Image (cartoon, rainbow, N blue to C red):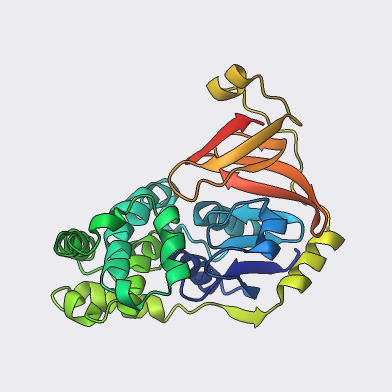
Length: 309
């Protein structure tokens, strides 16, 4: 297997999910630090426009979104599994809870309570990027967001209420990463994080256990080196999958059709390419870049809009 390269920045909560996947699977991986705000020319050479963090590169295959990164790592390295107890479907479903209901109020608090400290370029970028936040009333919404965050901490406390060590049971998995990463963000971005967590002792103990999972074996790599890896490689995953669902039929899609793939929540930057794979779980496009060479960019099917170019 080609080496795993994670494009991320250390303060990213979603990148923490990917780093914990590396830890759970005890993997060696290479770290490419990307800018927190655009421009991100080296990353764009690989993704074609997708700017969310993190992105996993395996040779000339580029995987976007932590949901797909988890599935791809599981496919490549089945053991130790990130779905202990056969809870794959439940673990995948819980991303809707953790990525929005749990994450959003924490992210709003991190922004709202630190507005005066944020550099102007970062603030302006996040105003456009986080379209789920109303920046015009972010400060006055702080009390509401505290309540929303605590309500989800109470949900997590209940998940752990039967004495289990992890949401998954006795062994940590993808469900636990879902449950933990908003707490990681809370601890790192809110000055009163410990105070907020104090009424939830089971959650605190759980978070400490997740912290101990670690990030596997990390080695730093430059963006130029990562681009050279892509140029020297060829995509590993064969094309040939085309599900004839309602979208494919209405757009008359075929493999090779020029399409765009765009997140449907936020960070709605389209990626253009030739349709390479399309099924219920994955949509992928082939593209050629002057710096990265031929790459295939993979996305989860859920949460992404496919349109003809």
